[in-house]
Image 1 (tube, each protein chain N blue to C red):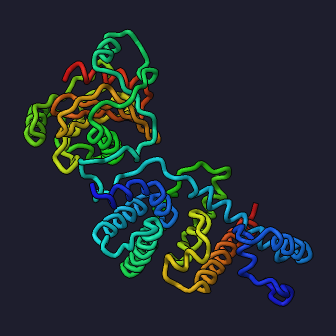
Image 2: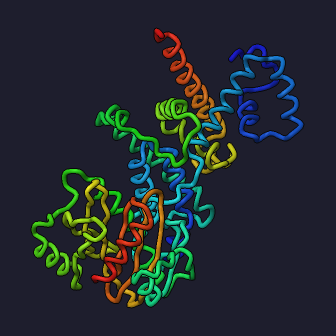
Length: 167
Length: 258
């Protein structure tokens, strides 16, 4: 195994976590991780020798965006909605709340979701994400803003539906 | 959000506040300002709650998962994907335990023996095969147990080593059948057993290229537990989501018969 490959092995838990935070279910997360590792190994000539984690997360972010585009074109999006299971690993305090949040996150665009997860789960700064994804800082901020407003709106929408339901 | 009453505080700064990216003194300014602007404070509280919820959903590093195929070569693979402790004992101790001395294997923890490469890929591959195939209702196996001789002969031939499908009826398991699986870039064999309650265990056999032997090893990943060992040219792994004592007893049955 090459030096790159053994470093990737070390990063696998983090990469797997990021894949799960982007994916709509566990299978998609596994596929995403798989594709990302293949791409990284095949394209290792492009790696500039620093910040392997950031480089691979950027690859995964792009792969995920492309995957969503393909799925939207082939009409798989709604089908996936029906079968989506949480790809997460922890038990929630309130499963209902958690499902609602997951639904709201699944409704985000892949780009908005990626920025949110890189900040909240992976702990990157806004500037680091701009460099990693090769986008302006303002774009990072607007994606973050849209993601948070969208999640809040979706969750509020759920509450309204619940409150209107006759008891 | 009403931008009119935010004065010199931008939304970007509120996000940075939620994400803990501001200097302490700026945090205090924002907190004081939020106290006077309850609508914005509610929104900021929502974002904070989102962050907590997202961490609850995705924050934990998954302990295990399928190893990407691109990294599945034998070679220098190191133990990373199964984080559970490895318990190992020597083969002679195993026989004592198997004979009924009842020494709990986990208590006899020692460093894993010789074959690092195979011993590390084996439990993960066994777990994956268990998860994928044992959950299949209609097609759990390729060749059913009523063709037992053909099954064993076929898999032995593909594996390149004489196999047996052990009789596990003493532990309540009967053979359903088997299938060919990929293991470390070569053909491997998977036998599947089921008990009266429909609980399944799988026995995976893969070719050992390293020419090394191990004692009895144990790995746990989620609900799935695996006992595995390398015996000359073949590595074996018994996986199941049953309780550990029963799986261990079943593994002893396998070991004795192979």
